[in-house]
Image 1 (cartoon, helix red, strand yellow):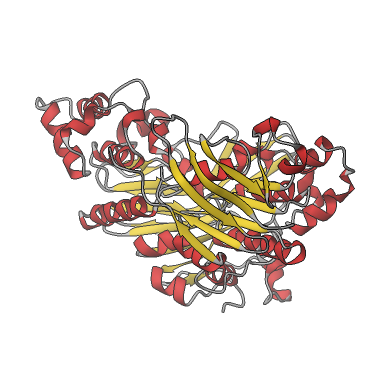
Image 2 (image 1 turned 135 degrees about the horizontal axis):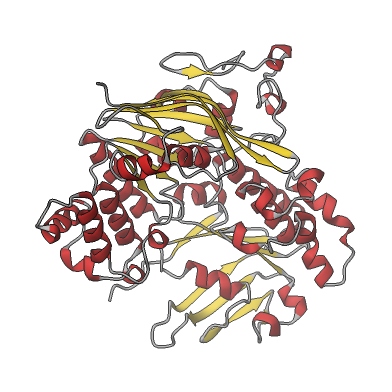
Length: 312
Length: 219
């Protein structure tokens, strides 16, 4: 069976008193081993909700529709409907690893990196006997020497904490890694190191789903980029095509806003997720908008797909 | 006379035995944008705090338009304190979660006994809609909250603005929008700006000149 994650018309809604937040709308996306897919969008566009939906971390007031089919490396599973016990025992850490946003606060502060890494090794490989050697191998792969593991999280530099988090994510040998804003607040050389690590993971035959607001970071690591706006994927395609020849006016605006391009903002503000327009959500900010945009454009099923009636 | 905001041979940090900055001098001239780059731990944020009068240096002095600063934090004279606006990296940690955006933007005006009728104009300048002003921080995105923080920083019409990693949490479009608002403000008022970032590409295109702090001495 093909190993892949296929999102098909995935939607997530939150019920609040007096309002419904449409955080993720009709997202279809495919992630396969050996590629890094970046999901790019501004804060509040629904990217983190999407990641949480895939890991079963949504709060109780969330309603989902569509499917997120995970195949390979175990029985086929719809991540949206699988019971939490199944996700905890067979998916998280084993088929999907999480690279956290803030590694230092992701680690338990009162235990050494070694205690946490060896615990993960024992849980994932209960039959193994050489727990310490196994932990050292994982640490070495992530760029740590054994002595580093004897430190507590507050004694680790940002880069070392990131490496510990990477080693932890790989203990259960997942084929898919979800990284939610991993580069936020990191120095340039730490971003470079992390991007190098992502490329190594991809070269090892894993897949990385990188969720970020940082178009420049996505450009440097991703094979494919999906641009998300107001809970919808508006454009998806090969990274260089999306950045050098964007077809959706929103993607074009984002690229133009980069400091080394035109450095000009997209006019206006994104719509409220409680009050999305029925048609194209970007139309109110779009200089190409026409009457046809009152109907919601579908994402074409194409190698470089765009959800726009009047693409660039 | 406007001669700039100057850190004059300051040594600063949190432990006199291991200062973060040693004998460091930098001037933010009026009307100019000075970029400050450097790795984590090199003292960028410490310098921001000293120049914002939020942290007293061990030695050296800060001069505000030629006048020496003699007291820091709440002891700083109001006239000097209100001359300098600050924007921080994390808007979530910079706004009281109980306040609506309107109240947050009006806070410096209220604290200084000035009329709050300019809030709508400030909000308009950072492109926040009237509806967003009624919301609390958890009901808006990071980008929208940082827009409110910029409006708040500009509320008293500061002569100097210190932006400490202001754009780290923001997407490219919101970054460009906020930089545009700051440049417009500079053009109108001749304010000086200190732009701190680890994003070299951003500083190259935003700042008139870029100063790079060397990395922390490895012990």
